[in-house]
Every structure is written in structure tokens, then in C-alpha cells.
Image (cartoon, rainbow, N blue to C red; front, side):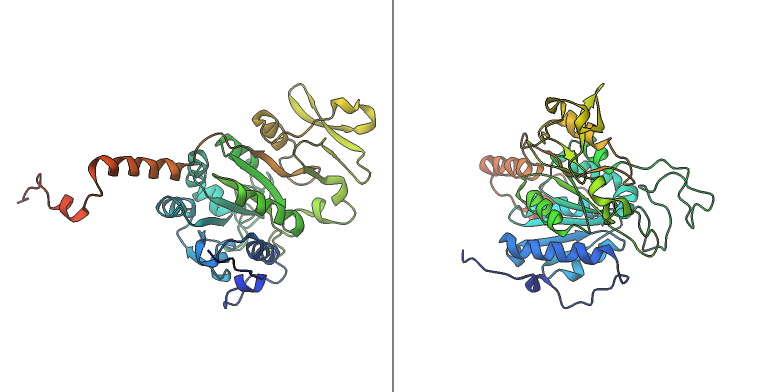
Amino acid sequence: MTTIEYTRGDFQSDQEVRWCPGCGDYTILASVQKFMAASGIRKENAVFVSGIGCAARFPYYMATYGMHSIHGRAPAVATGLATARPDLSVWVVGGDGDMMSIGGNHLIHALRRNVNLKILMFNNQIYGLTKGQYSPTSEVGKTTKSSPMGSIDYPFNPMSLALGAEATFVARTLDMDPKHTGEMLEAAYAHKGSAFVEIYQNCNVFNDKAFIALTSKDDRDSNRIYLEHGKPIRFGQDMEKAVVMHNGEATIVDAAAVDETAILIHDQTNMSMAFALSRLSHSPTGPTPLGIFRSVDERGTYDDGVNAQLAKAKSTKGDGNIDDLIRSLGTWTVG
């Protein structure tokens, strides 16, 4: 097959991008388009599937195949596509409301089945399209149009949820860090199986500065904990902070106060470590891990399993004919 060299412009559709000025979705779109151009994925072999919400406009802006599907059901639609067409690179895009509320069930089953999907969840901790109601990732006490006295709902921790669903690839990145976002997209694409990437995305209209601790010049170095496989987990302006395990929990300490050997070495194949790190920060108001929490290649994909069963059935019974099956014996007349 002839290799085609793309530019980001090749993945920009002819549709006007219609998000609010300053929305973090613009940065994510640029990062995805840039990655797609560098990945070697042929445009005709890429599909973006979305549900409903601000993020769900994504397929319109990608010059690939795409589907703006049903609220919360993008993982289900994409599962069917990935199973029927394993030759395609299938991506799912949605917001925290779409994926964690009405679509929560579809999300966890796509993850546990290990369908070969790349799932990007834009988390702005608010419902944006419907003008600012609290979402399943909004903090307790959040005052919105639907919670004027403050939300009493306890929010999901998306990293813990994905790990609990046995996702084989779980990562987190930030809209305002396009270099890191590109690295996470590359790793997710290379992974065989379900890849879940949470992207913190600022909604400057209804939840502005929700991630200011991770984006402001004054605070970001003190709060971004970059996870790198095989490396000690240290962070801070001068790498003065570190993560250790204490009583089974990931804990932040002054690096100078502990022996170097006590500092946690990140192992993205260790499920217990991944979960402990996911509990280190429930909301991005302080030190927050970014990077790959888990990446394992320990079980087959759902789509491969289904297609193996189909091949086995065909080898013994032939291809079959749906029309013959419908018109075969065993029918009856009603009335």
C-alpha cells in the first residue's frame, strides 16, 4: 500500500468549527488532527463516533468518516463498527455528561469487553450544551442552574471507574498541554484493545478555570504529576515532591524527607499501583497525576474474539444465506 504523507490540514473538514470562543475543544481538535496526520492512518480508514454534547460535534470537523450518534450510545455504536470492520481505526469522542451519565453503562461495558476502540472523554466537569448544569464529575457543592443550593451528588472519578471496568489502557491528559496530549493519543492508538483517555477541558463559559491549578504559570509545575513508566514519580518546580506508598495508599511527601528507594517507581502494568494513583486526586485542585495509569496486553480484544467465532462457524457450516434462513422450515401462519 502506498504511504501517504498528510498534514494537519488534510484532516480539517470544510465545516465551520462552532464552539464558543476560547473553548478547550479547539486545542483538542488541533492535537487530534496533528496526531492523525503524523500517525500514518489513512483518512478513509479512520472513523470518529460521538454521542450528544459540545464534544459530540467533533466528527463534523474531522475530514474522515464519522457518525454523530445517539446520546450516550457512541461506545455501543462504535463497538458494532469495530467488530464488523476490524480494519478501521475507530475513535469515540464525548463529554463527561454524555459518557458518565446516560452513557455510563455503555462505556464500562466497552471497556470491560476490551473492544479495540480509542475513547476520548473531554471532561469539563459541567454540562455545556444545555447551558451549565452540574455533571457526574462536578464537585460536591457545585452551584449551577440545576443545583442552586449546591450539588449533593458525589462525583465519579473517571480514572478509578475505567480501571474498575478492567480497561487495558487508561490515561489522562490536559487540553492546554498539546505535546502531552499528542503523546497520549499516540500511545492509545498503538494499544490493542480498549483505550480510555480522559482529557481535562476548560469550559470558559460555564465552568471557567476549573483546572487552573494545572494550567496557571504560577501553579502548574507544583501540581502536574507526570507519570512515566519505569521512572520515579517526582514533581514540582525543582522535583522537590515525590509519591510513596504508605499503608497501601499513594501519598505525596517531600522528596528530601524520604530515602530515594522509597519513592514509587511507576509501573503501568501494575493494577494496584494504577488504582492507588487514581485515588491520589479526585478533583484537579491540587497535585494531579497525568499520563498513562495502566497499559497491559494481557487479553484478547472483543472484536477479535467475535470474528474468530464467525470464522470457526463458517469453516464448519459455510457462509450461510440470510434469505434462505428467513424462508426456511419452522415458519408458521398467524391468524
